[in-house]
Length: 183
Image 1 (spheres, one colour):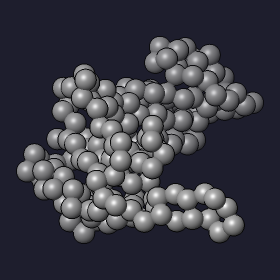
Image 2 (spheres, one colour):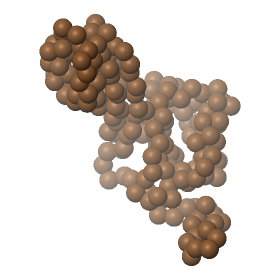
Image 3 (cartoon, one colour):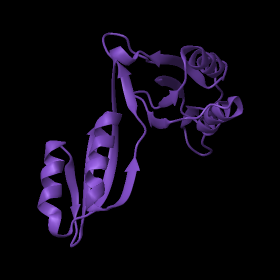
C-alpha cells in the first residue's frame, strides 16, 4: 500500500543524502520525493511516497527520527490528507492537435507551449489523474514526461511547524560582515 511520510528537517547541505541513504541502507525504495523550504527558511519539508505495510513504514519512521537533522516525522493518513503531484507532458500534435487540446481541457491541464508539431501540457492532481492523462495522451505520441514527487498536507487543524530546532546548532558568520546564521 502506498504511504506518504512528511518529514520536517533542518535546511542544510547533506540532509537529503542522509535521508535517502537511510532508505537505501534499509532496502526501502522511495517511490516519490519532493523537498522544499517551509515558511521558516531554516527548515525544509520532505514528502516521501513509498510502498510498504504499516510495520515497514513505522520502522522507517523510527529510523528517520534518529537522524539529528530530522525535527519531526509524520505518516499522513490516506483518508485525511490533501496530496497532489504535477507532470509536464510533451506530445506530438500533428493533425490531431484539436483532439489533444480537448482532452487536456477535460483534465484541466494547462497548455504551456505550442510548437509547430508539439504541445506541452502541465497537469496537477493525484497519481490516478496524472496516470490517466498520460495514458490518454499516449496515442498522440508522447515525446517526454517529467513528474514531481507528491506533496501532501494533513487535513484539519494539525500542522507540522518548527519554530526552532530541538537541537542547538552552531552559528556561521560571514567574515567582514555582521551576518551570522545558524548552520
